[in-house]
View 1 (cartoon, one colour):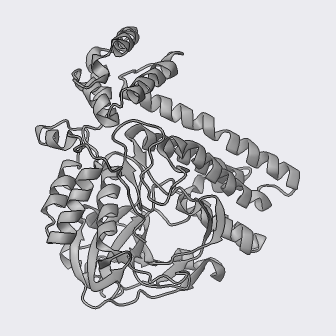
View 2 (spheres, one colour; view 1 turned 60 degrees about the vertical axis):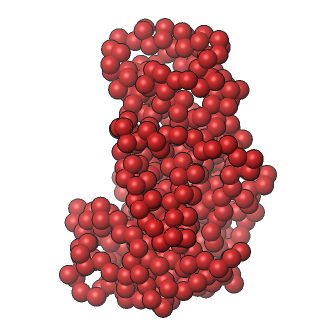
View 3 (cartoon, one colour; view 1 turned 180 degrees about the vertical axis):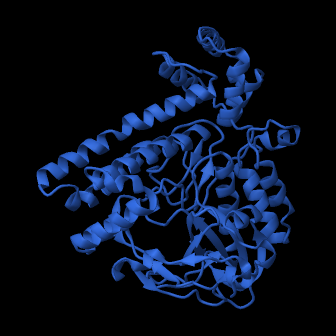
Length: 481
């Protein structure tokens, strides 16, 4: 493919030791059809939208400069260590944008690789549309995330519990370096391999750390900081990832791998949607401590290069990981201050926020709509009619009255912190069903359009704030692998 499409690919990851990847072309598909093209992402990458076709986006044709690979990594899955790798994804290259940024371009569902472990390497249309919708919603919510350039149908069925239409999603990421990549290097490689990987990650994501007194400690601390911020952002919008295995935690601080993810309606820290998380390991309330656990595994993988002395290396790692809970709480509390319209800090703010959450849980209040109602200063839910809430609201108003900023400034901060709409699960399922069963993309297109500015509080968002109809069956999501 020529440069008229705008491809400007490099392959820096392939210069790492060969154990980190396998050369792997995407497996051609029968009759690819371009279903979704994200024009905004294409333009930001410097790609010519008019020239984007199903050939490249399915892997049948490779753009100039592409040197496709499948990446090797390991990971703790539900607490158990496994050798993993890109079992159904192929990295076709790293796009250099007009502004000089570097982004991985990966075909998810591109066919079997040496890491497929018996799988077919393919993906179904429904899960790929879910990733497209949720990752775009996360971006609009200002949460670091991979993005979706396109979804292509393959013209070939795949078989899971039932026959499904095959699809390939083109994922765009700051990189696909994971905690599991470093676990792989530490467990199966030499120290020089681990050091080469860490140097590469520093140069790509934390170049300012290359001149630090201890670059690898700097690297560890910065990853911890970014993940503390990311976890707070997840919690503040009620997002539940579903599979927080170490291979699903990025070094860049982006949200990645949208499998059985969903957004919480009724507030309950024990909320879990994933059909495979029967023990609730990755429930909403467990996400921050699990992130800390994953980061401890990351720190362990860096022990051979943190310091020449084993004991000192262990101390540096432990001290860094112990900072995570404090960093997370600071990010979360600042975010909650925003959601409550607080523009300064007082000692009792944590208690004020936690008391509201307690009342929300007791009254089975909707997470998003509770904060939306506080922002609009109106609400008719069960929670808002209780005497305990009235007492809390009086305390909250007294707290806001003590700050020097105006009520208008307080309300503006609330609106910019509390989304009016989220991709509610029943709306996502409605969009997927229409697309998969009726070849109707209009339902999804409307949802994506409404989610484009979640803080707008516009009239057209009203109907998307409505809760799902009551059901005797709990909502369940599936990995889609």
